[in-house]
Length: 136
Image (tube, rainbow, N blue to C red; front, side):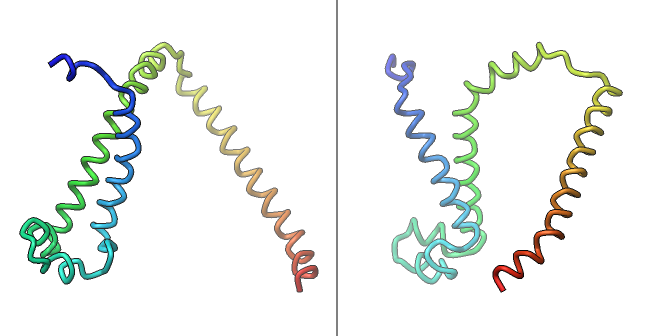
């Protein structure tokens, strides 16, 4: 039982590689883009009982895809917990601004974003005729 208590780094790397693949596989099954639009036509009549059970109806296809996505997300959460725990402890040490100061800072950031948006819009108005002239 000591082998179950020991942590192997390659397992985390393997899980980190396989969990996004599992999530994408589940999403493709949910969208019906796993090989063909009609999964029941190919996989639902294969003659193999396990494949027929999971793919011969839309509900079973959706449940299978959802299960794969949930398992993939749980594995990602499991992998991220060691990185998140120290961050939470550090976040508790931060001296957060009060409401008025937070509103002032947010207003400044929002004003700057509006300013940038207007600048790029003006650049667009000025340079579009030039690009149309150059590229015909």
